[in-house]
Image (cartoon, rainbow, N blue to C red):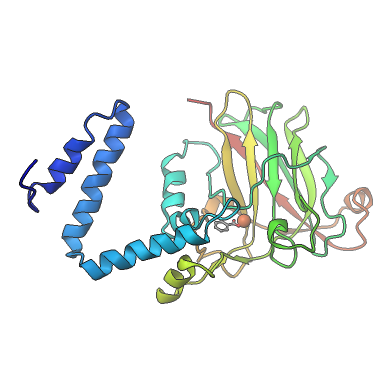
Length: 285
Ligand code: BEZ
Ligand code: FE
């Protein structure tokens, strides 16, 4: 089009993408153009504001690397990651929650009933669950991928004092679809604030804290993979997660445990907690 005006520019841009073969991609781009042009119109976006936004994105790119994505964190603090999880929810299945940046593929395989405590300080927690379908039938083919932070609040990737793969594992559930692990009580954790997202949180007077949580990915052939978290009901940040991941159904009581057989099995000198984590998977689409 030769004469672009503010009245025809959005249509002209939309048209420029009409040749995308993939219908879903074409739809997504068309709606993106509509949304960002609508945003500029609604807000009367100025040159200075537009340049500041591009500078923000450039700073996000500059601080990102193979193990850190400031763009994922942007999606997280804007609640977009959480919204995508919520939109993908399957009725009757356990709710999903954010993956976060600290999952690593290929965690060590352990047997159900293993202890991940090793040399970690912290309050011992018996995490136990059963994987079923939405009708409650056991899924003995399920696997569980688990990770958490250490007692100092850090994941092993950010803390050279921890051994590689500290406090993470994969396991196959038992034939009755149950699993258990001896782990430690997780700690609240601050999302990174040394990049542009930190600036955004500060200017908004927002907390960078995430409430203490465990991460799990539960998979089984024929079922939708579940990526979710389990939150500590007693955590002070449970009602103000910086990345909006908390769902009431994922908030767990860390109940006092006092079974001598558990203390004996896991060689615990003192008190421990118990967290029940029933998991329901939806059938694959
Ligand atoms: C986390 O769970 O550790 C996490 C999630 C989102 C952003 C940063 C950290
Ligand atoms: Fe986390």
